[in-house]
Amino acid sequence: MAEDGRSRLGRGLASLLGDMGADEARPAPSQKGMGVRKLPIEFVRASARNPRRTFLEEGLEELTASVREKGIIQPIVVRPLGANSFEIVAGERRWRAAQRAGLHEVPVVVVELTDREAMEIAIIENVQRADLNAVEEAQGYEALMAEFAYTQADLAKVIGKSRSHIANTLRLMKLPDTVKAYVADGRLTAGHARALLSHDDPERVARRVVEKGLNVRDVEALTKARAVLTGTARAPTPKDADTVALERRLTEALGLAVSLQAKGEAGEVRIRYSDLDQLVV
Image (cartoon, rainbow, N blue to C red):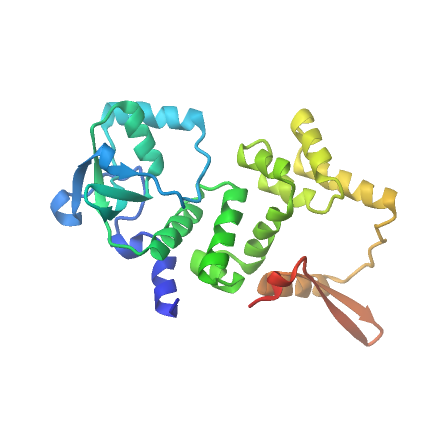
């Protein structure tokens, strides 16, 4: 996609709807000013490509009660698919609550988008609003990379995250499905998941975390202890503060773990990657 197109998408729905944004707490603008109109709820359907798969029951029940009392405050953003058919771009949670509340009509803003733009906007908007769990976020990044040839650098620029964040989030997809399911349903945090990446048996440790309520530091300690036990750990070489700071800056810039190894007056720069895809720029 052209640079200006990605820049526009990177601003999320604000780029399409002016300053309306996607804040559910803000009152809806006037129908005349923003093109808000009402559609029969049966004309609106969820998108199969919505990166958000998890809708926690407690939060959905609270939103349903609010919708039942006050209606939908922030319009749902949809795109037309055909006669009396509109696909949700942003606002599926509100739409679900409206169904539960028994609403017959919902306020919408209709926006013309291609399949590609609709998916990009949905992923970017959810990430920017922190509506996705870490696994859903990683799946969204993978989809943009696989279907639309995004690189990690593109994602970092468009979404407003560091390259190291993008790279570390994508690494979560290497975890066993059981562990990813724990993250998706909230039993494990993203911090837990990242710590488990270094363990040779993440599934077993993940079950222990869930059963005993271990925190991230507990998982890191278990991982280090396992490395010592299996002989994979090495005593760290003390580094001065300047070297540590430079490693941190290089890691942030490249989105990959960087280590500086001094050898007298010379030295080596070591860059760690888990697969060749991380080297695509």
